[in-house]
Each structure stands twice: as C-alpha cells, then as structure tokens.
Image 1 (cartoon, rainbow, N blue to C red):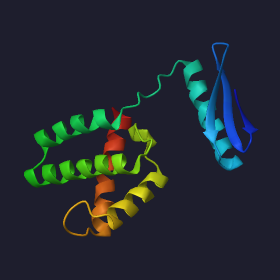
Image 2 (tube, rainbow, N blue to C red):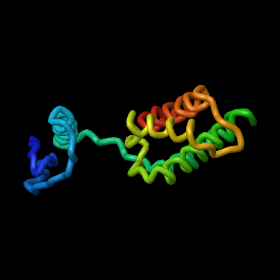
Image 3 (cartoon, helix red, strand yellow):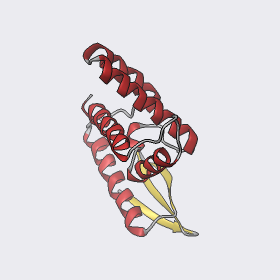
Length: 151
C-alpha cells in the first residue's frame, strides 16, 4: 500500500517494503499525476509481493552500443549509418538539454517534445532538418524501447 502527501505544493509518495518506510519525491505536479504515480507504485509493490520479477532498467548509454552491434550484424550499410546518426543525435541532445533521462523508460512525451523542438530549431549539422527526420529518429527510439521491454 502506498500513500501520497502534499508538503508545500510538492507531492511525496510513502510506502513500506519489508516493514521499512520509504519516501520518494514526486514533485510539483497536479494531484491526478501524483495519484497515477501512487497507482504505479502499488502495482510495482504487488508484483514484488507476488514474487514477479520486475524488468531490469537499462541505461541508455549501455543499451545503445548493444543495439548498434545488433544493427551492424543484421542490417544494410544505409540503415547502419542512419541508426548510428540517430543515436549520436539523441546523446548530443540529452547532454545539451541536461535532462535527467538515464534509462530508456525515462523517455516520455515531455522529453520527446523538447527533443523535437531542439532538433528543429538548433542545427547540429550544416543543413536544417525536416519534421519527418525527427519523427523517423523517434520511430527508431520506439523500436529500441520495445526491444528493451521484451529482453
């Protein structure tokens, strides 16, 4: 069982694991989002109590080389070049935006919008890119997130 608490406009999540109290900061978010975080934590705790293994979170920096190694063995030269470029750009933008995105699961719609805005308005290369290019880049990221869930 988990509970949420509001302290000075900041929500906190409290829960127990093996009789030990844990507290996590959710942040200055609407109550509906804090409630969603509470539900997600309760599901996670139920899985732990049922003995269901939780998926291991993989860091982006660890997963990208694994994925690119697979691409190099299984794809054509054009695809390899495209996917390497996509991940090079992703890492550049992550560093540039100072996001707290460490794991693949941390990539959310808010980050995607920041990424799109950055890529379309800040030129990393000599020529301006199109919206379609950014969408293709996130299709690749989506495939990797799916592969991470499966593995």
